[in-house]
Figure 1 (cartoon, rainbow, N blue to C red):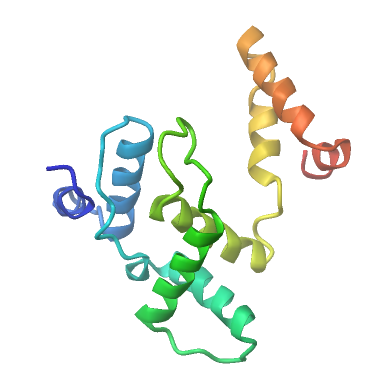
Figure 2 (figure 1 turned 90 degrees about the vertical axis):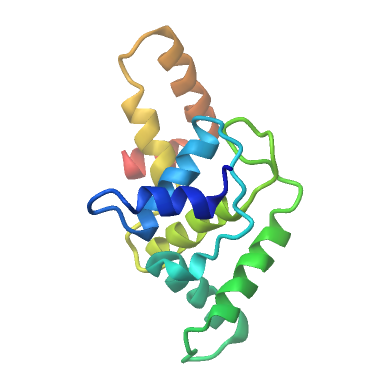
Length: 158
């Protein structure tokens, strides 16, 4: 049975593999290897960074200075983000709606951006530069990325 809980339990039997990397293994198996994994029993509150990102969002939405870390706040923020992204499909195959795996990424990247460690467009620019010099297909992919970016973004982060 391919459930998040089963995969997480199995991965955490490996030395030095904790809950977060078990989540990422399940995420990569589902998106990259296309294993149909049920994430319905996955709660992001068990991971430090998405929890911090969710609490930052909750603070901004509720306009308070201090907020206790609670499971219900993290769940509420995750549900709100799922609603905001309702109708969008998950890359790279776009075969299912945005789910908790993408919300985890959003929360982690938001937290990093909030503290100045992750400028907007960073991944796109890094991939654009990494594609240089690898042949015709890489050149086409690079051009497509360039077309999505403004010249300012390319020079700012490049």
